[in-house]
Image (cartoon, rainbow, N blue to C red; front, side, top):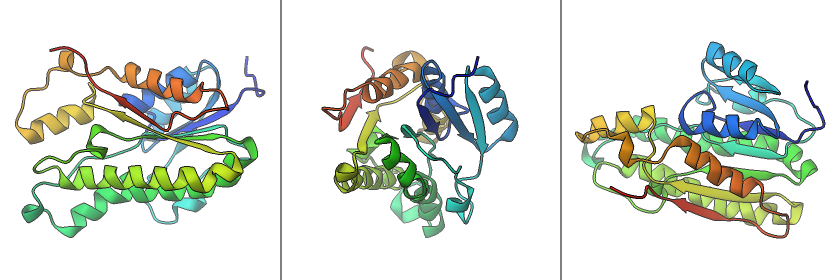
Length: 230
């Protein structure tokens, strides 16, 4: 039975990987708006959760603010959508930098800006699923890491800007996670994909849950999660 008294969460990139695990976990306690590019995948995920609706949208599309759902209140906004890309700086054209930053930074800022009135009304939370690459950059990883450094800066600034409005902002920085994106990254790096050495998406979802369940007297501003073991 649908319980519309539930708090409301919106999760971007919810149809796969970390985003899906987060949506499934929050679905136990929240009404979830699940975002993804593929309408069929969005509808299927929404139908599988106790109380959910879909938001199919391309975050790289123009006029993004006009596509964001109209909400009176929003308790939790989780940004999990992201892309990888780029190569060595000498080999990466500016259009590739723009493509990665468009999804990993600009869309996050625009969706958040459009939803701030609803977040303020609920005194809600913004959770940015960042990366270990938000702290360090490796050769050929400058484009992706640059976008994640920028995302960390966005979160840090937003946290202080929204503090007077009662909106809390947190960043979660997982290491390597067993996802399709990680498989793509390992292929790009020329390495073996061994999911036994990586975090499970559900582990990252538990870190997000820890942030969401934090009592209002505190904020988990930054959570760093790394694979443990061989």
